[in-house]
Length: 410
Image (cartoon, rainbow, N blue to C red; front, side, top):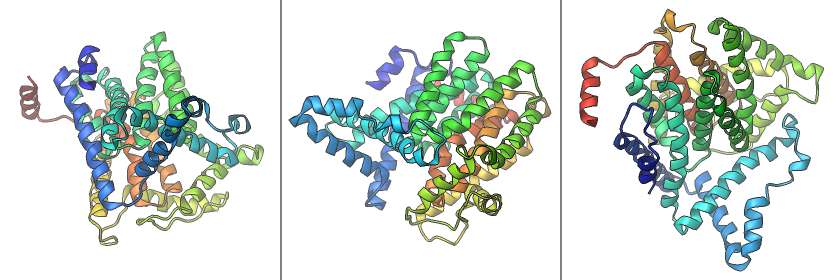
């Protein structure tokens, strides 16, 4: 059915590929989502996916006894919003984090109605919407760098960690979809297409719902991107200054406005994760709202994000797969950084995602002490960082490979 939607609405337009190729990418995501579900069901007795499914089935029990009450609960109950409007207050973080979970469970409930509770069928519904946002992410790059379509297609969709995690029934796929909508709409707006404004607002609102914390980080980066474009600033220098100023504000603004303390927000988020017990937890210094605690934790954060797990520490095949993915991506990122071309330095469209993702990586490292969770939370941002670095480095497939690939899809 969804393949028919792709064909009918010509979603393959402005991709450089035909409908069969784009439909095949969607089907690949569905297969990856099913594999993810199978792996988790075999290895773990409990997981976020099984919890969401169980919680949704419990909600559905009300449908047969009180349909009106069910739909009121399903559509209208989003918690006590009026008492949690201040998103900068650390005490409200639990509510806004839970809001993303509520959205995810409510969508799972809709899928369970349509699939009669079959979780593997739900993978199809989830992945269609994940795919739409991911396709917009690809189009955002492709419309500017058409000659790199094969590398962009692979780095947006087919990096193993991205394919595995952003096709699973978790919130990571929603984050990926929101990022795709935001980047595509922001770039269209920059090109003076006013019709893109609703898309940008929708993408930001959607990101706010599913992971409000990422919304707080992306808004200043977007605003600065538009400033760079408007005043024609040198993007690399401008983003470097912006990042340095952001760090100064991060560590000092709480002294001026105690009710808005980013250090406290990050520390509270870390505390939430430290209370959870996982099979691959790592040591992470506790953040205590002081500059010293952050300086102590940052080296561990960078190590966890880019180099963990270290060889020989964990004797599990899933950990070895995580290690292979992490180290391969880290080496690729380093190699692409070293290959950046001078004539690409003036492109703000590319540097915005690079700086944004590097900031996100550090925040993930500071707040998440679990290897599996880090690999998963990084995945949607890896699909934003590596395509940008591919274009910045002007990486190319060998001409022979491109001709062969083109011959296969004809």
